[in-house]
Length: 196
Image (cartoon, rainbow, N blue to C red; front, side, top):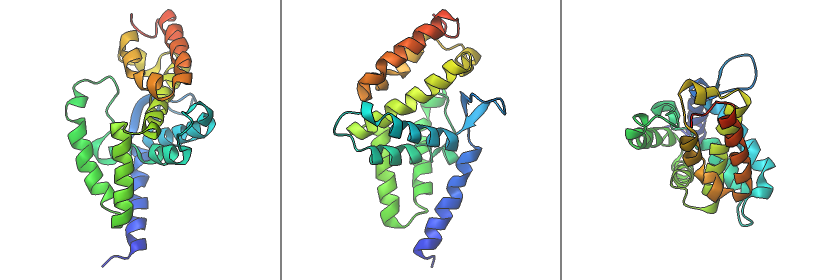
């Protein structure tokens, strides 16, 4: 019978696989083209700390950070679904639910329930914390695509309207950051990185 620490260690080793899941979002450095899920999660967790002042007053930033650190763990099994891939979204929920069951199930029952509930809260955007976390999850790729000359937008012929629709959680979850979205979208459109 595995001990509690055996289960925790198994989970820690399993989530190392997050480093191998590539996203479509480009990185700003010259070493390679794409970020991985672990880098993305770390990046937005840091954003939560820096942008805490733009969160609604009642938001618990520690809870937001925890959500951001685990929100993509299911992609170890489910893979990363590109934000603008309509076909990929057709079975995304089913793939991610199966992955959540397996991966969170590696933990001791109390921790499995805690992290699974946190993940579900993020996915449903069912709290102010989850709404703020979702806003940051949307904002980060916007910033990286802008900084890399259109990045995955240009590679996939993404339109201005698609980006604005995708960014809607920023308007509602972090309204003070919405002007940043509009500025980036305007700039990207004027440079031809987004189709009109």
